[in-house]
Length: 167
Image (cartoon, helix red, strand yellow):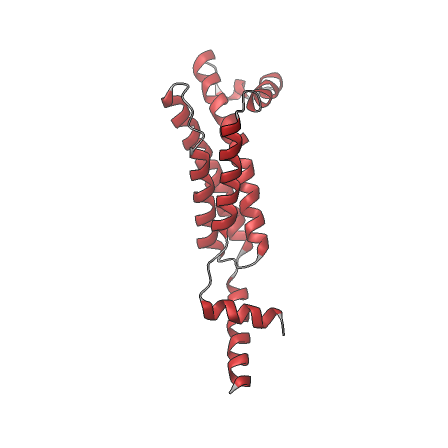
């Protein structure tokens, strides 16, 4: 009886590990990060200078949920990838916001926006004026993305993975 249960757990664990798709999770996470940064920058533009930094947590949550759904990951590298996207989301969102403000204020084309000097100046502005609350939201975005990017397992699935790892 015990040997049959162990074999079922090992088969279940192998099936769970085969279902993982790290490539899909990475692509989905990158797309979700870019789209989230676009939403953040439009919201910041519409807010007229008010802080919308809490939206970074929403970007992290969106990244984590999409990575979990498409990647079906159960190993730690899914959480690390989610955290990396969460960490990248805040500077990219600020860069997009600065780019939108620059386009609006200077009335230039998007091609003129990305010349060498202007792009360097925008990256310098990304990290100026960051408040403690912004840093808290940034860390929360990374944590949310990391937590949500891994698939939650049932008790049987968790026992199967434990059995597989400790065989």
